[in-house]
Length: 419
Image (cartoon, rainbow, N blue to C red; front, top):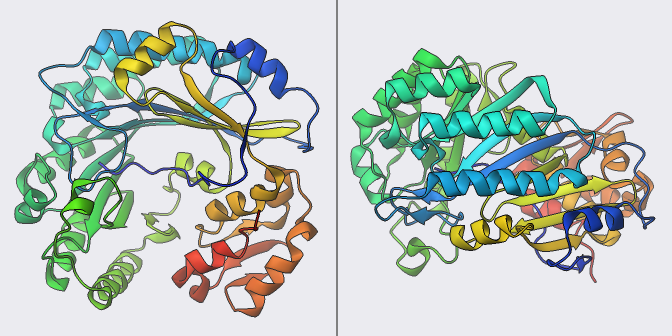
């Protein structure tokens, strides 16, 4: 499974503001004190819940996932999740949750009763918007008709299914536990119980040809999914593939694959609203859009990250990564291992790192709303990006040009300021 991750600057001039021994109530008081920013309005708030276990660890995966060896203690983990959420409440008092995303790992390994308990705890502790999008990630090897019917009845209203490919040979090379027939069966079950779902697919796989890429896309489109996420395989550091890299298509071939994908998706009526995301009209992922628009999110669970805004500062947090360490810390009253305030100098890059992934760009006033900084504070950078033909702007919108989308890293780096 490849969950969408919010993009953040993990290095730079962030500075610690809290000690992990502090109780959350004290942290909240400190975060609410006067600071360097002035946010007139707080962004929409999402909730991310991390489930850290998988049946097996895929060789390309750099997410916080751990292979299940025999069993996992679902009851202990759900209890720790509730404790983590309860301890976090002082940081988000009075704020409504507009989207919920249960990612991993493989959250569909949870029992039907476990998912029901988790959602009941969330509703008990948080004000959830009546129309909230509530997504669960699922892998084809875990699909059971009755369990997924129960997930829907418990309140899950969107699935994100980690297909990756319909080619059994390619699935085996990726270390997936399912084959092509399992993938098709999983989609049939998803369509039976959910009218809103996403399919994850990957391309530029080891040994994959342009024809095989086309076959995968055409098979996916035959199910008419409301949303498709299409990722280029990357060899991430600290993965098995990084240590033992497979032979993957060269840059020219992978570029042809990307052009083919875009043409096929556009021809089928899908909107490419973000770098890797395609949706039918009105079916873009609201949770992921909140990330790209530099919205706020509270992350609970092992290794989960949060980005939270306060009137005078914006803060990032990270939970303990190892499930056992997370459970112990959460039950002791504070699962947060790291907490850092984003320095004002880093905010333009942090904002653009996310917002420029949106093909339609962003409203000009969103920059000040989300960062507390005036737009003219980055006028020099905007002019440089415009001069290079990487962005286009008017009085309402700033958006990447086709060239800017092609050279997105170069565009984003324009807003990275030297320390």
